Image 1 (spheres, rainbow, N blue to C red):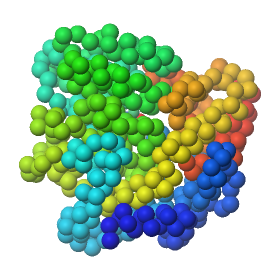
Image 2 (cartoon, rainbow, N blue to C red):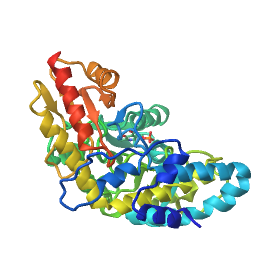
Image 3 (cartoon, rainbow, N blue to C red):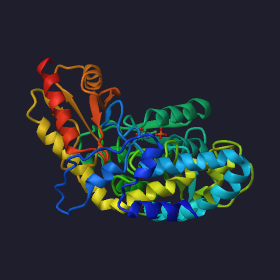
Length: 420
Ligand SMILES: Cc1ncc(COP(=O)(O)O)c(C=O)c1O
């Protein structure tokens, strides 16, 4: 039986996958006031119980990596054991038979054709395939922003240093309005512009930028577009066709709560042929499989097999309900923290793109100190974010986090702020 059917049955059986919990040696969380104010009566307590315990810290750092639900872990472990019993056959002839069905489900989620998807390890691999793989010549210009993910900026800098590509930087602030951001990208366009790179939800503060409008302006001039959807996929609406980009990449271990070390690269069909794969391929393959891990060296099929369980879980909650919940969690803790002396939120709390990822600072207190005190004294994992021109603590609860945990977090902030 394929992971899809198995996983769906488990999830629909009330999302209390206790057998997995025992097998993993991780006790499911006890009864917690998970709370829901969305008025739908949805059982968030069952969602919480479907995840492992958070240890040693409460994880408010899901923008880095989410805990995978127990059902996902259980499939990964079970299939990893199976894979180890006869690796080449069990992985490539058995587990990989699930890949077409997985890609069909992902294609539906992200609004593309299954043939336009390559399964891989993470966003970095997909984005670097686009960055290094698109055909460009000396003097061609590429537009990006200083808020893009550092690995992507350095990949572009490498191309610039090696091949004479020219990088132009769209200048905008994380709290600027959408029109200002659209204009910032448009302003850098010249007759030599060949590509534009965007981060859909900017990882420093959760700012969602108007990628659709920017991509439309680019497409009208024949400019290729690359969208980094690491933080937006399975979190806020992401539709490849509607955005109209040429390349999009994401990781599944963030907002999909998928197996750690899995992701996908989406390439518009008409761009597949001209785009180079990142590594040497084993064979000529149809469609985006040219870029897939299965064609670029040995990988672990058990991880990819378990993606289905993560999709089951995500679909059981329902995309819109999940997005609303993540917004609700963010607004809940930020509203409570607003009374703290010196507290500053660096995210747009009324923007429709708001999700579970925001950033704050406390006047007069170094972010390094806030991060380490939260972790060492209060056992809460957040993440300091300090690119040039920004200093904040990123807070990113997931669907399993509770209002009680957010109360604990805000109470910790109050204590920390007193000593600022
Ligand atoms: C916007 C963005 N792009 C890319 C990445 C890299 O993701 P991965 O390490 O899964 O490749 C991250 C990780 O946080 C991110 O936030």
